[in-house]
Image (cartoon, rainbow, N blue to C red; front, side, top):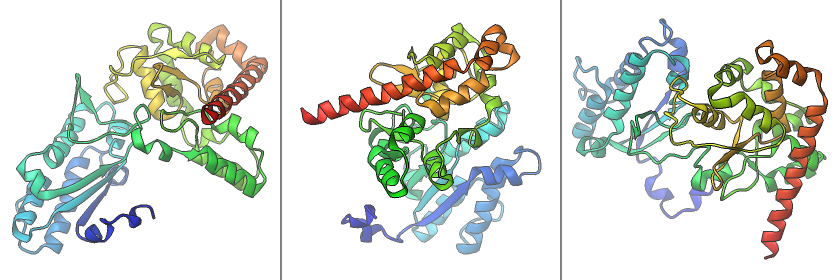
Length: 344
């Protein structure tokens, strides 16, 4: 609706053909656990190109970027490409490095830049949990502008529900806003100080009960696996954050996949992107954002591998009471700061 108000809306409306790729769907339908997914993607799109652009794509063409370029040359068309869950392959085939490289090479062929890309691609938009894969310190696709959980930029207000939106929902459906805040608030960015998890907010309204809905969106087993990599005292850091403390972190070493972990910072950065931790970019610190996620951590660290610490956490309701109290106090403190800044 906002876009429709812009002067350029009519100028670009329906002017480009769109190629939409759901990577999770391709992986799901692959017969060999994603082994041929890159070939399947190209084959499926090239078959459609031949159907809709007659005599534009050679019968022996198997490389999608060349097929698109051929269509553009003969028809004068440019394409918009939308890729949903672009990183699904890195998550589902996390140990298949050859497949990952084949996939990145396809993306490079489509988007890396140069005359062929300019002729073929009008725009591209990719969604996913992970930022674009890095090799060393270089991004595999340098032409994209990234918006992530560490650097959401001008899209910060769209990461989740804003505080005004949640207040409006609480008023409309007669929900306790303070309780909603302590459970689902916590992510904070320079442009948007209070961001709420929309899935949990909406489920609490539908169920008419504020509770922990996080467990239905992420697997505890993956969290246990990551925390179990006790780099540089990672377990101690988790315990401190459960007590309401913040931990310093360097996000620059993260390679944007779920296997290339070299230190505690890499695991903490992944947990930021998964939503388990919130990131304060100004102070370069991570923290557990709210009571709902704190419960997820408490469940994840209560196993036997945590020894006496896990037993103590599992047996003690006192820690959860402390966590909840601190999260609530933190929310009130941040609200007071926001109010004070508004007055100034």
